[in-house]
Length: 299
Length: 299
Image (cartoon, rainbow over all chains, first blue to last red; front, side, top):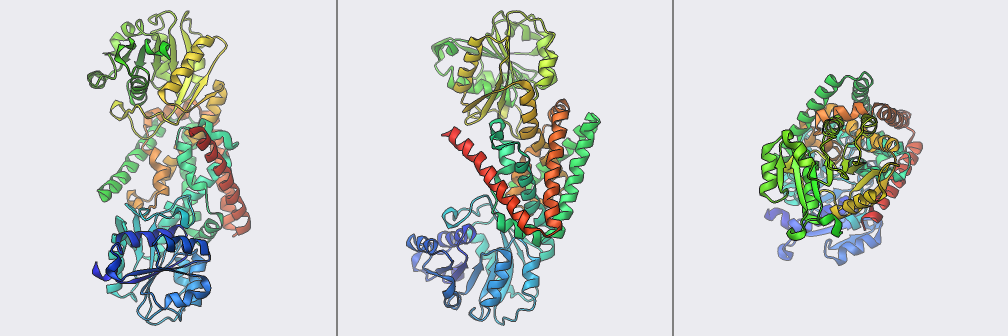
């Protein structure tokens, strides 16, 4: 991957995701100082930039007022902001990107990105939409980790206007960063699937915490409740935005989930042990097949 | 804990729980061979008994037809069977326990145990109901682990007829086995709380797996879905029994959970970002307080 080793990378938004991307590139791609590759980052937090620079993760930090200066020097830019902020940033800095730049994002919803940028005229810039599938309850650059992506999925949504050589370079970079599986799809299917695997899970975890009589409930916990609610230590403004941006898909998934809860409830109400047992047996087999996929891919 | 070191322990049911209890006692209590303490186990699986004996975890295995012989030689007996099987076993072997034996169980529902044994006449045997709060998707002796209980909760439900010195001995043993927190309550409160932390979580995880379009959904997973559904690799007959045995409490919790899901759904439907954000913020704070409890206890 000689090509990747002498690129100049720009990270816009040095939080847990941007920070982890910077670290993964530094540790896995630019691990030899003489390659000539560099990492720049732009963030509103000077302390985060200073921390990243002093530990050698980034070569230079830029405050938002100097974003244009940074963008002009980069050949690959990761926009690691909230969905609407991603669109706003690209629109307001569209003239600052250097010609030929590969720009990508990490947003958890894509319809707002694709529709938001539909009218954008930004010749010479190749915008590839992508979604590194890693998350958790932690936030901020201090919690970023270069090994965060090991064994994870990265979804990319190539479009006809993307240059094939840039898609190829992006896939090579993703693999070098530690991701195990690259899934290619379109943005509508992405939003449909992610509303299920990610947003619905956050809705459920939140409702499950709110349902608890009090915060002492974990005295009676054996691990299940703790595992199901860990993601409820939620970044409220981000997830409010994600829930509303993918509203239609999410509401559909919530309703399907409610139907399943209702089926189980009816079996319990009617003491129908036979159907309940069959249902749980099917669930077990289905979930075990999911595990096998994970295992195969991780091997 | 000299007293605990020369007891003869009996484990009835050498699955993941019985096996882990045997290993925790062997590794943490009877770690010096010369103490005189012994562990016996009774199980329907001769291979499990042989495996446990040949690796030095148990001193001798007994098939069910020889259970009485084992029980007569033990001073502390753990019944590690399904709830109804626990009641049946104690009833049919009530004359085999040696006088003065401390008998305890691990059942996830207690009303069926307490009511099932209410008419039992078994003089000289002290039956202390308890619940080691550890679980997961694994089963069987092969998956048992002596470190399984580290950092976990153990709920005990002392009753007026229990001897104080036996309650004290039981607590010492629980602590020696590696549990971090001992919670004392009554069986009704146990069943109310556990229907929430354990059974409701298994209902949710199962419904969430059943809701998935297919088993390839984890290609779009970033960890949340995987974490929320791991316990759906469920032991169907056991959980069917648990759901039905604690039916009233569980249905109440499901309904409260559904109300919370509905609240979130309404915020999303009406694009009410302010209330949604406030709700998620409250959830975050509540869940973080729960974490602090765990952390304090684990320290």
